[in-house]
Image (cartoon, rainbow, N blue to C red; front, top):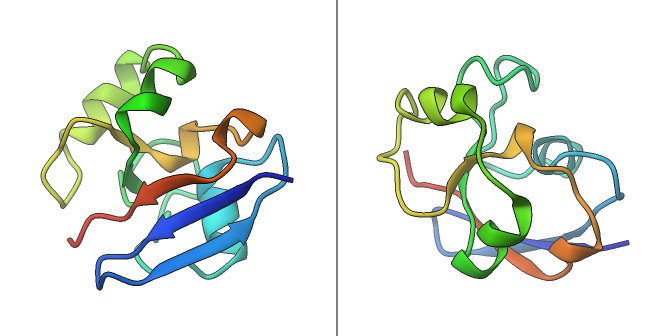
Length: 105
């Protein structure tokens, strides 16, 4: 099981074990990670699961879909390099020990 490190807006870090095949959003909700609201329950329709991923993992994930790209324009926190919707990122061993930053807004 990969470990995902969520870097919270208040500076705290929460490390959780994630199951392969689940999304980062599902992992965050299952572990009560603050800042991941997921109002649309993973349908990429609200941008309330916005996270910022490190550059080195972005290239391993493949291209962002046009729909996800458009939805990030509606995220409450400003979009940054590495911004993604956590509902669109499937957990795999490639993500082991990554630091997923939760934006402050």
